[in-house]
Image: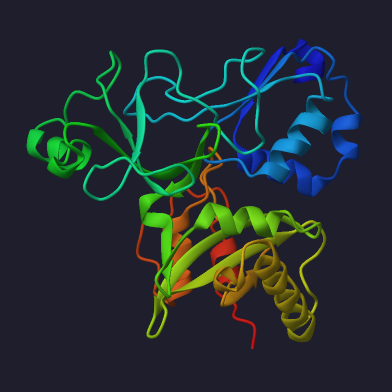
Length: 306
């Protein structure tokens, strides 16, 4: 499409980018992408390795990447770099757009310091924001403007600011794991896994653990074929666990790693993490799977390495 229609702006999801990475660097090189002038990312946090691949292979090191944070409820972009104006950082959606006031706060609505994780909030109203929930204004107030947030809009995402004030999205608040008293963002562990040259894509979820509170379970898609047998899978899983321990710390090592040909995704490319949580807990999947692009993958991911 880019070659045939001289596309200038290409805006896609990180999961699509990681799927392209799995297919190899030679694929984009078969096409003329010289018409591109701007790249965009949307839908979930983009890990730095996927950002760099997108920048170097697709954008050929000349197209800025506009990594956007927003929601259906916000009606427009809230955090995104201004291309050509702000310095880009792979993996960060950078700074709020002009006129938008963003905060990162604790459970009581107090601003946390730089490099500390917290809940992402929007501190002042904006024209395109959600107004109510049809027929249920109380639910609207409870979900989006809870009292402890002191009038701020609660986005439901966890984030932190770095030393330059740039915002890094860690994932949904529901996706933050509490392992032995430590708060770990699933995005952080996923990024560490994808930084390994063997890994194309990963999704991390938690499951209850009697001692640690939560155990880390990782679902991994490799750039090559899945391990041929249980012994090879165990060896590779241990290698990846040690890799995460080196990249983040021993506390972040996945308790279990499962390998799949791909991950359960909607047709728009979003990973269905609630299904992965059910699989990790060994629960029967009772949720609606009609929106899944690849429902057969669920059975494959249920396989546990013995």
